Length: 498
Image (cartoon, rainbow, N blue to C red):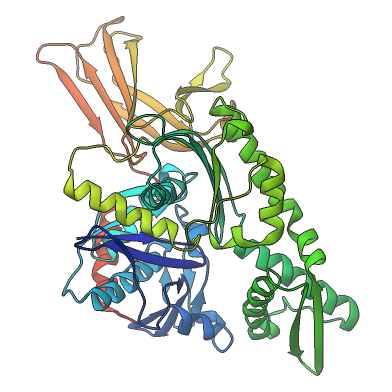
């Protein structure tokens, strides 16, 4: 059995395929199908994940971490009051363990070892590697990853038994936005266009409400809620802001009641005010939708349906704007909170029961290339595998040795769409030591490849006797080293998770 996990910014979910081929969404130990992606260090060796962790944000905010998904792929740590520092991968590993433990209890099995974890389509190479490392630290075998919009369309296909057409997946979650255009006109679903943006979604909608309330307190009572002395009250406000946001989907107004120092305040927020707060964030998604449709080579009129995924897609303002943009009433045939986890379960099941058979043809979300140093010393990004190329993808570059006895090749590998060095991410500056005795103009090939999970591989071959072959192992500076992963696995598995 393979467990599908939607490792979300604000909430996570898990699902599996039962013996009848039906998707079953896991109910956690608290009785909910959604688990808050919140980390709480209860004691030095006891970690709490979920609703209880979220509730402790008010009493012990220094020991609580939210929205860690936004920091995946970054070389940072979160420090708690015990003095311990946790990497994003380590914190995510505890969320994964919580999902696995609750699933084992729900299904009634001793151990689940194989998982499929979803990632935003717009995740970078470093963020995908960080997710893989988190699974390893959690002690599970991540047999694969699948882009969140792709997982959602797999769930939709199964439920509706779709046989053709072109579909848009508008995936607005807790902290990221993805849009994918998927064609079902061939035997295997194919992603023909995608785009996305980070730091947009429910968590940032909450922050917009928090900012509004903080500004109001500062203006009317001269209270700076961002001051260290009000840390507890600020964490409480985040919880209340989320509830306010949810209420505004069904009500015209909602109130937030606060007690800060000697001030008691009830702040009313109308739906119109909230819509104005999130208007700028929505417009980011609108731009990405237009890009994805254009890159897919179609028009809005050619879409057969628009599928809304992610809890934030329920917001009436978002639904109305997407309907106006696409000319389609968004489909609500599946639960937007559970579609991604369900699709991950389907993906895992099909990979397990039909190994080697493609489940879906995905596309790469970022171009892969290298920095070319021009004669004047300036650098230019040369894109080799371009964004929206279907996966797996390969580019073979024919090159020649530039001087006799050349000792090495230096390749600055890039990810992104920009032209200049500061406009793209540097995956790694690869330094390859060459064999001795090479002559000027000797040919060799560099093969750049992205596997079906969008992980990058590089191979260099020189046709000499005997043939020389080099397979590069990436040392991504923003990711954990192999030694760090092994060390953190031992530490994490020694701690309890509840």
